[in-house]
Image (cartoon, rainbow, N blue to C red; front, side):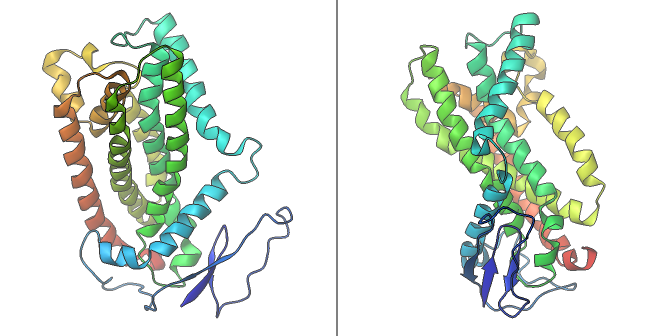
Length: 309
């Protein structure tokens, strides 16, 4: 089956012809086609494989995942004056605010790392994670028109929201490295660990994102609670303060936060310092466990998505 994809929806060839929105600027809407396996729409009842992550099915629909991700990237920066530059401006501005308040006014220590680098290295994975989870929260609801028309792995929708954020974190990583060099820090070979930490952050974001996406589709109150949860999570992560300021007897509690190992890992990669392997192992185990558990919840709830839209 072949589908027509635009920046806001997908339409089958048998549906009404795609019409360009007259309110958009000339040439702003583009269409692409993608071939998908012929499968019936499921609305209620059993929803196919019970596996939390049906990788074979996801691979079959990889072309759709690519187009959904690309659509989310274009929609994110559509009709913005600065475009993708927001991927740089947002963490930089937050870094400046944190540096001014927490470093200059409050005097928060940074383990011998220049505070702008310290803060930016913490904001980099956090901004990607929080943005991905926030975008996932409305992803299923925002794709109601697609979900009620055709079958495809619903998990592709929040996965595309997470994937779209990779552009931001890649650009921001380049800026972080440049900022590190600007402060005269000599980069080490441990810098090669950053891509692995990015993948780990992506796994964690996907696990949290598909869970939030499924719960929000079923219980709309979740999207109103989410901003408060993310705000608390940010202050429970060592973004504006180092792990070393936490008393030794309570440090284990902070290390249970999966973002702790990731954030500390980013800083260690930049500065060539020893990694906190205990925190990294916890982050890896929690991220993988969350992804699997969220997959089960998503599979259980997705059969009713078309009915509750």
